[in-house]
Structures are given as structure tokens and as C-alpha cells.
Length: 68
Image (cartoon, rainbow, N blue to C red; front, side, top):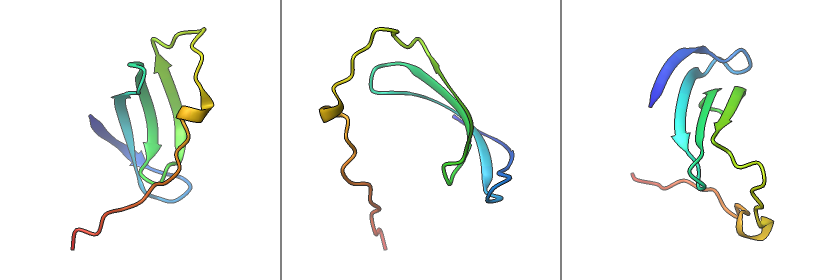
């Protein structure tokens, strides 16, 4: 769900109110532009004693597909 909420003061990109779920089932609500500038980020239902193995949560590559 995306809701347009204005423009980013850093880059003038559209700012969205975004709600999604993470890998662990927590609800994540954020206000951010599409360039990754976050005004705020809220994680609901997060377990206080959740231990995350850093070896399994490494993002090794982020890329884009050429659909053209």
C-alpha cells in the first residue's frame, strides 16, 4: 500500500507512506521517498529477544533487470 504524502526535502522525489511485512512477520510502516530517504520507520510486533544470525541476513547483491 502506497500513499503519496508530498516531496522529499533532500531530493524532491515523491514521499510515500508505506506498510509491509518483513521476513519475520513484523509490520513495518515507513514514511520515505523512493530514493531511500526515510523520515521515520516503525516496526510493530517485534520480538524484544529476537536473535538474528548476521551470516544469513547479508545482502550480497542488489541489481536491476533490463526488460527492454
